[in-house]
Amino acid sequence: MGTLKFGPVTLKHGICLAPLAGVSDYVFRSMARRFGAEYTVSEMVSAKALCYEQISRRQPTPNRVRTAPLAAVRREELPMAVQLFGSEPNFLAEAARLIESGEYRGASGEVPPSAIDINMGCPMAKIVGNGEGSALLKDPVRAAEIVRAVTRAVSLPVTVKMRIGWDADHICAVEFARRMEDAGAALVCVHGRTREQFYAPSADWEQIARVKEALSIPVLGNGDIFSADDALRMIKETNCDGVMVARGAQGNPWIFAEIAAALEGRTYTPPTLAERISVALEHTERLVKEKGEKIGIAEARKHLAWYTHGLRGSAAVRADLMRVESPDAVLPLIKRLAE
Ligand SMILES: Cc1cc2nc3c(=O)[nH]c(=O)nc-3n(C[C@H](O)[C@H](O)[C@H](O)COP(=O)(O)O)c2cc1C
Image 1 (cartoon, protein in one colour):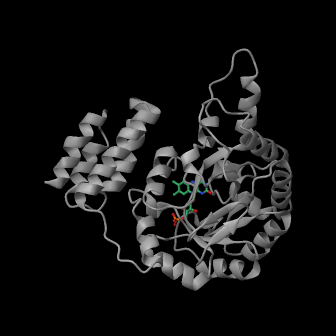
Image 2 (cartoon, rainbow, N blue to C red):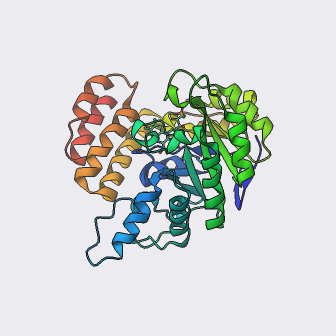
């Protein structure tokens, strides 16, 4: 795996953080970046909601703005992609245009992303029920139309994150990815599972290898990378141009440093307990700063559970962490682990 290039984006190794709805917000992404993720993707953003929110903002009494913050990109985050989901080419194209032009922005200091990514992998019933996410795997004509429409609407590169098919009887990875390339996609990321598999059992990397062989645009491999060894094996077995890590980065932003060290033949030193605790606390404090105490603490609980997972005595502390109400209450609890 050498340098990865698509559109104006150049990545040294192609070590990427995957989109994670409810998880990969600004704070999570910046932690990943600090420890070596070269590229990140926003949480998935509803194209339709972004467009409707935009319309309502032009009215005298604007609705609450919920979707736009998910699509916000700060300069220091580049290169990163904003991921859109939807099923209607026009809405996706308009949402992408709003994002590139910045017309939807309310806050200051935001910039356009490096790419627009289209979600063709989400397996959730309420998403596929609308023909969105992995439902697009069953409608390749519409999926290609979406890529064409978004490509026409923006000058940013358009990328696709897909699964390998709907179910075991309908594996379509190679054919589908080829169509996305023909429609103008600049890169595809393949999660080696079908929609029916959701997140288990283990990912089928063979399909990623086949897509890589069939396409001339870069291919990112995704699914079950929880260590540098997994990443090296993924690269060896699939010849992918880069790797995307999702669950393996939860509570473990150091995984990106571990992968970079392995690719560069350097020794990797895992974080000490003290470092782990200090980063977990910083993550909590920054969530509170970004989202306010109520939401910040509520969201921090799951991150704290991940950061402390596997540490000696963590099960007992975790139960208490799940009930914390303020950032000040977190420190004494976590310190119990350090004792
Ligand atoms: C909680 C959660 C949220 C996710 N949200 C998204 C999302 O918004 N967009 C997307 O394309 N994939 C999403 N995914 C899928 C991941 O990006 C990734 O494809 C999948 O977890 C497999 O990678 P992993 O084995 O490294 O976790 C999500 C996965 C999880 C577990």
